[in-house]
Length: 321
Image (cartoon, rainbow, N blue to C red; front, top):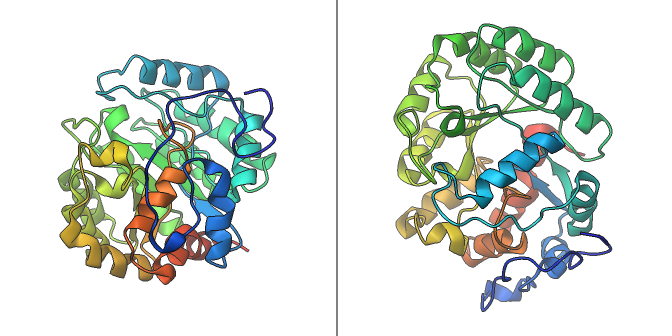
């Protein structure tokens, strides 16, 4: 990308979404250009996206290479649409109207998390709108560097059970879950099987964590796909459990793991109760950002639901002004 002058700037990428219809003429178009009209039409000050990734450049290049190769945990062709520099992506989020976003990083082996936290917390300090973000891995040092990240102002954590390849009940994490529960700081957890299940993903292992730490504020990524029903159950059972919409209701995820239509009433109720938050996986998505919003609009769950999911629920959780 050489000229991030507006939402349609940038090099040619994968084919744009085409032929999508949006209920009540919400104003979304095939491209991202109309995203600001979407949130303005709802009377919102902008969007809050709890599932955005920023990583140290070298690591980000390796992650993108893994997606390019359709690695074993990806399982399908996955072209990265927004393959730009940090500065360009931050500017682009601003043009879309994303006023608050995370910088989620996650380690795939021991010895990485503390350095990732130094980078993501530093990135947030110099990036308006970025929630100070941190991560962890099951290792003896985890409780120490998580405590340091909390003291440094971390407001959201990320843990990727699938990529990390560890059980969330690992004894090395028990103190970490306890620290986060006591601090009331949310953790975005990739606990579901999608896109490729592993021995430690699915609702069962993470339900065991919640049984031990019922006050934990957890945001289940991707609505827990493909085990939507079970993760909706957890959101109903535990006051602190929420879900993010990342990739749900897009044609990309609907091809393999569509959300069950009969669960839409429960999704509506949970959203209005503050328990569903907008997530996108930007920049690591193979379609325009607008498609995530289009998918939510097509559910036709009402403007109050969209206002809550796209801004209000995150504003309450993170005390956004």
